[in-house]
Image (cartoon, rainbow, N blue to C red; front, side):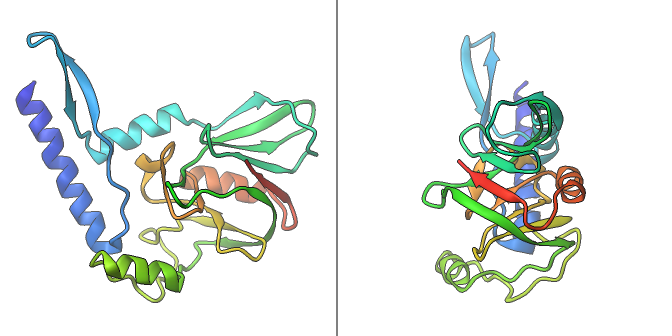
Amino acid sequence: MKSYVNALVKTAVKAIVGVGIVFGLSAPLQAAQYWNAEKREWVSYTPSVHTASRLARSKYKRKVVSYRTDEKPGTIIVDTDERYLYHVLADGKAMRYGIGVGRDGFEWSGTERVTRKAKWPGWTPPPEMIRREAKKGRKLPSYMPGGPENPLGARALYLGNTIYRIHGTNEDWTIGKAVSSGCIRMFNADVEHLYENVRVGAKVVVL
């Protein structure tokens, strides 16, 4: 078991370093635990990116659920505490998606509208983010064109006049976590699905 855990840790470190070179913004993997029956204690280890991503996709699978709300069909409701986004449907139903949300100090709530939609959006880091990351020794690009390596993922829904978006991610393991700078991130397949079913002007409620 020890060699297996060591292998997982090495894999995770390689993956984190690889992604970090590209972005300098990768979300760190969180430690997990397993029960060591021989030592009769919990042992911490860091799962590989592949394992963490697979677990996130399994736990936060897109599905239609019963959902009571006074909001009209077509509304997007973001439950940041529960890490779910609900696209309100008719007859007391909603399409539920797993999400990643803002980390400590970057949480927000309020009501906005979808003002724009984009496929494979480009990314322009805001000046405050560039300055913040520079203090950590991380140099961000002034602009990154859309594509598979872009941190905004496959689609983006722009919210009002804010800097926030609902967008995809190439870091599947971050779904279900509070790791972003305030944007709502989704699996790429999920944000593509939402994109096709949401109109510009749709109401977005962030709880």
